Image (cartoon, rainbow, N blue to C red):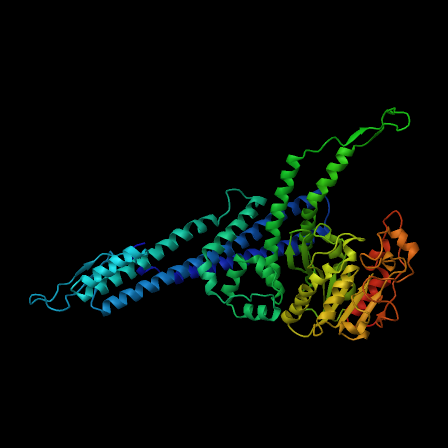
Amino acid sequence: MDLAALKALKPSEYQDAADGYRATSEMAGKAGEALDSRISAGIRNQLSGETAKAALRELKELSKDFHYAAAECALAGAALDGFAFDMAAAKRKLEAALEDAAAAGCTVGADGSVSFPAGGKEVDGKVPEGGTVRVSTSPTDPTSAALERQAVHMHPNPNFGKAVGFADRIGDALKEATDADTKWAPKLRTLKADDDLVVSDKDWIDVKSDTAGVRDAGKDYFDSLPRPPEHDDPKKNAAWWQGLTDEQRSDYLSAHPDAVGAMDGLPATARDQANRTVLDEAHAKARLDYDAWLKKHPEPERYQPYIDPYTGSMPKGLSVESQEWKDWEEARKKVWGPVGGMEAIEKRFDYTDESKRPYLLGFDDKNNGRVVISIGNPDTADNVATYVPGTGTTLSGIDGDIHRAEMLQDRASLTDPTHTTASITWLGYDAPQGLLTDATDAKYADAAREPLSDFLTGIDTAHHGPVNSTVLGHSYGTLVAGETLRDHPDLPVDRAILVGSPGSGVDHAKDLHIGADHVWAATARNDLVNLAPPPAGTLAPLNPMAYWRLFNDHSVMYGNDPISDEFGGQTFHVAPGKLPGSDGLMPAHSQYWEGDSLNNMAKIVTGGNP
């Protein structure tokens, strides 16, 4: 970049352009949400048939277009802010060099050269003449720097040394501007859609790549912003977010969606926006991985002739599924699982009732996955219930756990229509997967205590007023909830509900620090958790039916049984539940979100007594 161009450049014009892209991003985001929440949801709720299905497919694609445009425009805004920051820094250096040169009596030419006046001690009766120094850059290697210093020292005119310094500073500023232009031009060129009208999975992979490019190129710009707290302290997170301007928040969110989405204490709207981008990127990758798997593992023949094991004959017309196909189908479902879980989350974005608007407060597809989703806005709701699921919970099977939150929110709204309720599914930890293996180890709960504590503190921090907060633990989730309350005496939680509990990590309800009368527990009579084994290592593993015969009711692993008199808390009525049978070994363990149990939990969540 030459001198005239940098002098004429106005960084504010690029900042204005960034504002325009941000406004476009916001409009696109709102348009996409309107399509999902009002138009598509309205069609789905009121119409049926092939025409309605076709319309919904087209609207879904249009919604993707808007969301993609919102993400890319927000990145364009951040990139332009980063470019303007870099160019403004270069221009300030140039202006300072020009001002200092003029004050020293030097003249700067159009090419950046510096002319200096005569000066210094007379030599043979003459003052050393002035001259001109070509524009240069500060030497970076020691040898060049030493030669420049030697030349300045040997020159009879002291103004020569000043001119060399000004020429170096001018050259440095021009180089910095040129480098910034070279760095940002390709980044901005990539922020555009391809030449079709379909937002594909590959397009979302490109968004992730674009995000990394803007983040890396804009390192100096982002480093100039107030730094986020190093540790996940909800109150410090909130203070940091509030200290940013709207433009800075938008830029940071677009370049660091994974970080913003995971920050407890930030507004639910900001976390939701960030996590939806993370979800879209992860969903696209998972679908591409699934398609690649299908290509690599073609489906084998599903059926083969039935062979009578006794006669060896093959009765005509009888066939069975082949073992090869069964193995293939099991592997396929495992690969598809995370995709299905993500689609279960995305289908919640079609809503018509604002009180049931979903907010994605956390998402990570690594390992078994982590999902935190609220039905209703936790920042404004009068009541907030945080459900902690237990053993076997994964991203792949998150649909059922979200449905539990939906049912509780719906029932709470009917129970107390004068107050609003937000119902959260918090899979913010690595849940144990094996009933008689992992679930007998408290290490999963131990690792979840701080994350759950930070989340609950964050809910209180981000809330716009007083909030009635309830923690609802189910199965192993009761241990997570119990340990968290036990180890954080000042946690902003008003009530706890423990259902199907193998123990909450304490012997007495008062040890949860919210008052024993605010701790409610229930376990169905036919729930096999009543027969939970003792901690790992005290008995050889037995199957559940063996425990059924071996143990008396209410033998639990982690402290006194929450429904026992010794525990000292409150209990509420639930149905006995189904006995083990054809629908599984533990049907009663999953029946707390129906009937009297659901009604009673809704009463507790809304501040009443069952």
